[in-house]
Amino acid sequence: GMASLYQDSRRYHKVFHSVRPRDASWCPGLTIAMEGSKHHRYSKGTSLEESMGQFEKTFRMKELSADIVLRGAIDEKFVFETIPSTIRTVNVDVENIEYISSFGVKLWVKWISTLPREATLVLHKAKPSTLANVNAVEGFVLPKTVVQSVLVPFTTDDGEEGTDIALEFGKHYTANGTFNFPAPKASTGETMVPDFIPERLFKFLRA
Image (tube, rainbow, N blue to C red):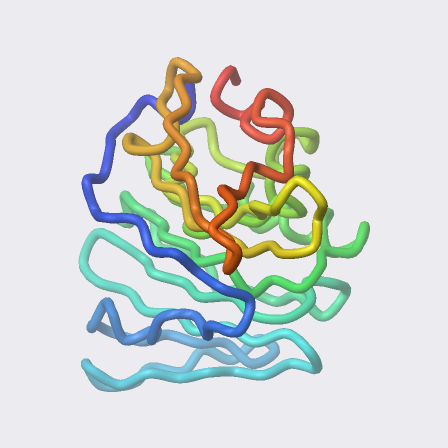
């Protein structure tokens, strides 16, 4: 399956709605960005956050990997860089994608089709809305794709208290569909339970 390529032993983090995404500087390298049809190059170690309406992205490239952080809405304004054919890993942090319109889905699929066929797409902190497209839309991911982490809701039985928890591939879910979810506690001490259907949300594991 697409998630069987490799595992990552990094510890999971409990993530609440108010927490901002990690700093995009986690991968120093050569930054390339695009405005319209113009490409701009910046010196090593620099970064650029580019805002196009509600959509923002941070893009960093090393010798064999591209690291991308997305924020906001993916819609008709979605414009992205061409990834060089030498790239073998494309990391995309999708935690702060607010929504993807139907037109945005088409543009996303078109962009995915331009990625190197030999590359592995790695999605980080995918929310249920993003996973719905991963599961249902043909061409939304590469043939070699790892959903490295997901950001999913846990809640009390009465729904009065809930939080989002980051789950990691290899620790909380595996390629063969084995789940080992944490048991976060509510302020009352009650154990919260997943507010999703694992077999449906993790359908991509069987692809």
